[in-house]
Amino acid sequence: MKKFIAAAVLCSGAFAASAQSATPIPTLEPAGWRGLMGLEVTGGGDPLVSLRYTDGTSSTVRAGEGLVVRGGAEYRVNAQIRVTGTLGYHIKRTPEADVEVHFSRFPLELISSFAVQPNFEIGVGLRKALHAGVRSSGRLGAYTANAQSSLGTIVQAEWLVSPKIGVTLRYVRENYEFSDGKFSGDHIGLGFNAYF
Image 1 (cartoon, helix red, strand yellow):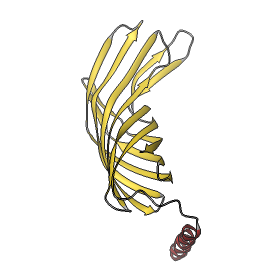
Image 2: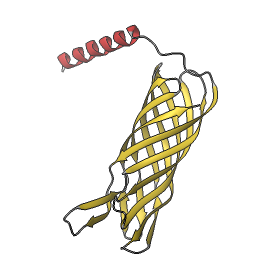
Image 3: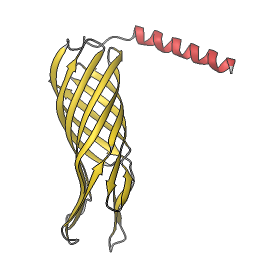
């Protein structure tokens, strides 16, 4: 155990030294407001709908999968702390045109971030998915199943490639309540933000 602790201390010291020697990115934006647009790909969650086709292929719509497009604003309190609020559109659909099933929702998020390095931030926040539901069209006919979402939690890391471009990796924990039961929407997401 003592050897492990010693090794951890040495590694942390080496990381700190390398971080100090690294060339810093340009100074972050000053305190104040600015807008953002984001795009993210997510994966995870319980299966909501599974389809099997006559050619032997299949597709599944999961409660945490999909593509997210979001927009919003941030307020930077100082060089280390900022608060971000966004509204997005999160959707996962089957690829077949004649039998389409999709799960969509509008996530409203509030995240507080802290800069641990000039170009690296850790954030925690809350998420509420609005108007969540599964819908189908095509040969399956028109069908809608609405869901109530829980208040979700977010843990996010963001690497600021520049003061106006960030790459995000996040974990979201949330649930969806349908008439036939509760489904986990927990997921991991990889995306980027553009600030203006």
